[in-house]
Length: 308
Image (cartoon, rainbow, N blue to C red; front, side):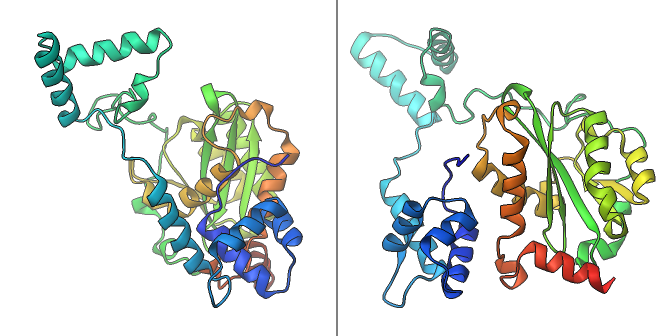
């Protein structure tokens, strides 16, 4: 099943490498998960006098998007004041911003879409200092501050980052692990993002690679509450990033962004076949990466694993 997604910068890097290797448009599309028509349009739109170059292609695509993109439609303070002045001048109505928001919520309940123009689209703000802020307290949690310094240097194979991508209305989830040095990725489909499901998926996917699992770094989701059992079975150490410091797991965050190209927000993962998830995993692990010198995560992981 081919799902619509935009061509990303990494796609363009890989497209450049595959063209250099003499691959046809059909072969490029098959490797990246695009149709031949999509590849053809990308090449025709973004090829310059010196041929198709990924940096130039990215600049051209971004420039085109900026030209056609509408101005952000947000209910800012200026917009609220403009609405108030207009109503006061034309209809003699004086109103507050609270009245405007009430009008928007009434419109939403009636099936309208005014709420889409709000800056935060009506999402509740979770104050970071609040008593119940965050995703829960993890029993026996070991903070990232205690993680060995060698992990940050990405100088060895075997340090992983993990996270869940939750589906629409919490229907199913994907559980991802990414090895920091090679970018090798595993994606597991979970029926629900529970601690039991997360533990079983981790052991199932990483136990065959146990010799190359030294540490795993998670965020603070409750689905990782079984981390001590996981660490014991894998003979590894499990650490937790600082709350609201996503960059401490930047490799995993970036990889999840790539996965979202295949499964956009709002996807109901209960409808996605495991074979589709496995296909996305293969595509990511076979995709040449600029940060790896245009080698694939598969190539880097297995080369380093052979060295021991």
